[in-house]
Length: 304
Image (cartoon, rainbow, N blue to C red):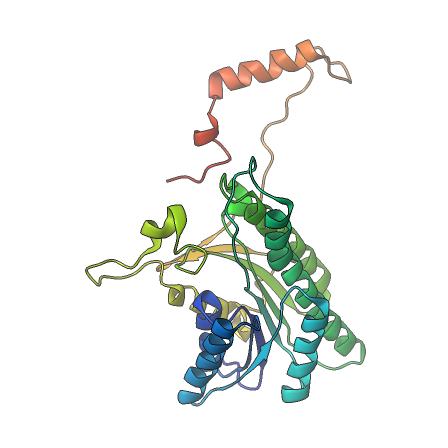
């Protein structure tokens, strides 16, 4: 089950946290793993440590450093992978970071830098992987392709303290769904995970206490290692029919995000083809008077 022997996987942001656990998972399933992380001392050390851990159990891995959102670095990541292993089968986009501010006080750079790493970082690597698979398919070669994107529940519920992060994560879902539609004719899958896990992004601030390991040593539901098996499964041959899906994963739970649906439409009460303000008020005010939910109980906040 889940045999990836001979397959080649690239994981961005794989020196620590979720990416590291995902890389180890894929290596244990037999994939040759390319660990990508930023070229900074602490990240380099972490990436090299991840490779050493994989090699300890007989796996094969290497490090390719670079900025996941930079086109030149992304091209080098692709070239280095093909030069070393001769193929690419799995692209797991994981890299990210946060700059927490409310919308009132967020600077241009705080917005742009987060969107750049999360959304553009997914884009440039997704573009490179999918173009490679498409060109390979056009030559008549068999293609094994798996895309796994990393989003967050902030994408659907919003985040008062992370509007940059939430916006980027929403864009990732839309982009991956479009890729899934495009790639189905090649037998390539594209899915999104929404992990709840202890990472550098959740270890501080308001979420720190929630995500910490229990002091009594009991099961840590937010251990990033709990997320990795789902990524391994989505990348496996057995998951060939799963594509265009969004899955929330944490602890021992995996939940499929249901496809969005529209509620019952309001039609003009006078039967007119266009709306007047008074008619909108007649229809909508009555609805919200009867079914009113405040911001904190409505669409914008996840259920407890």
